[in-house]
Amino acid sequence: MSSPIPLEVDGLSVRFGPRRALSRVSLCASAGELVALAGPNGSGKSTLLRACLGLLAPAEGRVRLFGTDGTLLSIRERARRVAWVPQEEAPRDNVRLLDYVLFGRFAHLPPFTGESEVDRNAAARALAEAGLADRSDAGILELSGGEKQRLALARALAQEAPLLLLDEPTAHLDIAHQLDLFERVRRQVRERGLCAVAAMHDLNLAARFADRIVVLSHGQLVSDGPPETVLSVPLLREVWGVETELRRDPTTHRPYLLPLRSVAQGILAGPADRRLGPVHVVGGGGSASPILRRLVEEGFHVTAGALPLLDTDAETADELGIPYSAEVPFAPIGEVAQARTRELLSAARVVVIAPVPTGPGNLVNLELVEAIGHPERVVWYARREELDYTGGKANELSRRLLAGGAKELNDLDALVAASRQAIPTGSPLAVAARG
View: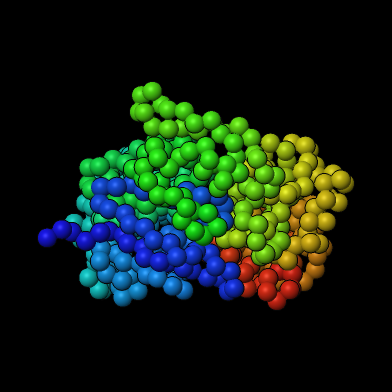
């Protein structure tokens, strides 16, 4: 008798209010297979993964995990089947790495018991598989971004779940860490027979490591197959709006793409029917990039600034087609950039302040947010006072907002939910995420 298929998605539709984020998507993923989910921002990749995890309820269709309808599984039963690696996490406590990975053993612990030697051994193996065995007693806040993503992979591996879901786990990593992470995932798929499904923006990375690429566009599945058959010049033109040159790697014989130019101005900003927003994001230094990507993926129209030119967040905004106010690098935010920022803020129905260190040069960003009034509509995310390099002025500003009724959030899901809830009312909401 054959083993049940790890993941079966059958006619899945997901709605956010009147907007359909996924429309009748069907796919399967088998043991020993790495499947890449690809598509422009707002295509539904993250929504599909969250539905597979049971975090979003289907409007139509169903998700089966190893032959069982996912809605019939308890949290503990689901955790024995599926492990999850998010885009990033923002830990606030300096948890020891071994203890953090032991969180992945929750599904295997009997009620009212602690970890056994079996659990500790599983966590130690997972740390070794992620290349962190020599750091097991270190604190999580001591890790680099690449090491934190490997730690998230280690926690997922410690679950010993046969299905691994990853949501753009390399989105904020340099190329060396991207290759390292997916080489580790590929090895687990090959040696342990895991089934892995990963949302990926980098099509060349997907072509290098994935057995199949599933392409989504505007919530619909438009292509599914091996990289050699899926990736094509017409597909890139139609789905991404980009002219490319398609080549073959002489060593791996896998395809790789050379982007040439955009063929439709604004197509990279996402689906034309986006109506949520606008949401304005204040950041810098890469602090806003995960927020920008998540909001665009969720269907929001996004603006940003003021950002320094050539800054990581500015590059992300350029990549996503996000309008933003700009200033020259290493200079205070001048009057022209301030005027543009006021314009974007006045148009925004939601304002997000990313976890950016605040100094004398960019304090004006927070002052402009405060100037819109209504502090009760401000939400701070994982607020940290040590990011203030203004002699206390930024922290005093945040305290005034909190005293006036500002709230605090702790994750991007809550941020998205608050933004989505605020927009239909027509009331401005300033959501400040400082993590």
